[in-house]
Amino acid sequence: MDTGSLLAWLRVFVLVCCLSIAARSDYATLSVRDRHWLNWSVPVTVLLIAEMMFLKTAASNFYMVAALLAISSTALFEPPNPKEAGRWDPTETSLALVYLVGIVGLLVGIFQNADTDFVQLVLGNESPETTLWWSMIAAFLTVLVYLSAWRFGLIQGGADAKALILLTLLMPSWAFLPEPFFVSEEALFKLPPSIVMFLWASAAFLLAPPVLLFQNVMSGNIASWTDLKMAWHATKRPTSEIGERPVWLLTEIIKDDESEKPLVVHRFLPSSNTPSVEELAPRLAELESHGIESVWIATKHPFIVYLFLAIAPLMLIGDPMGILASSI
Image (tube, rainbow, N blue to C red; front, side, top):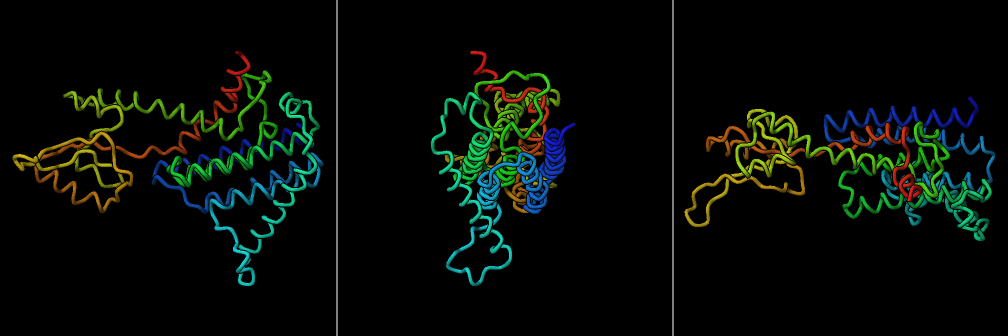
């Protein structure tokens, strides 16, 4: 096994270890500590620098590692304020240095690759140096997309966004990974690996509704048309079993506008914020006081678990969109 292959398989090892630990935390607590992503950024950065050393690439490509680190760091740290440079702590000073080197990598790379023939680049006929720089630019833009999606609420979970950003650092392009096992045909284009993992994870996520429906049918939770509507995205649980972890409580007591009598309703959509266990306690007590023993609840799906499951199709098949495009 040559050095390039060794580095590629080390990336897969880091990918599996990092996401397995994060998935376990996300499944158990619906959260992943920032310290996890910070700790795993160390081997990810070491692998990226080692790859650049192995390739004996130009300085501008080396500096692009700093550009990637700089844009990715904003998920965990505020950018250093130049007006407060005299009061920077060691972390802010280090970040400022990474920013500076990254800006140099961007500017020098733009100057060196301004005359790139993009047709030849897509066809894979450009020089390795140029191809590598543009792949790092693609990774830079991918991180920017994740950050923007998170800030604008398109990606709800902060841990989900941080996971995708770290995956982009780990796998800036397909050149940093082993070839997929079952599909080795060269596609005309390939989406960045982290985006492909997001697509595979989303595909797995789409399996959740029929699985929930099957579980509800087998548990005997469907006794009405309302139950059938709820069974696709929620589960029915005894009130006594709720309270150990945060959930969305979809069954509520409201007053009828005309008779002012209490009515039991089942909301199809949960609130935007997940209530804490303490906030659920009085609502559960109210339901129990009206003789309601079981309620419909919805839980936050731990998306990082789906990301972990996406490792298998990523390594076995690769980019489904690229394969589809090449077959048309």
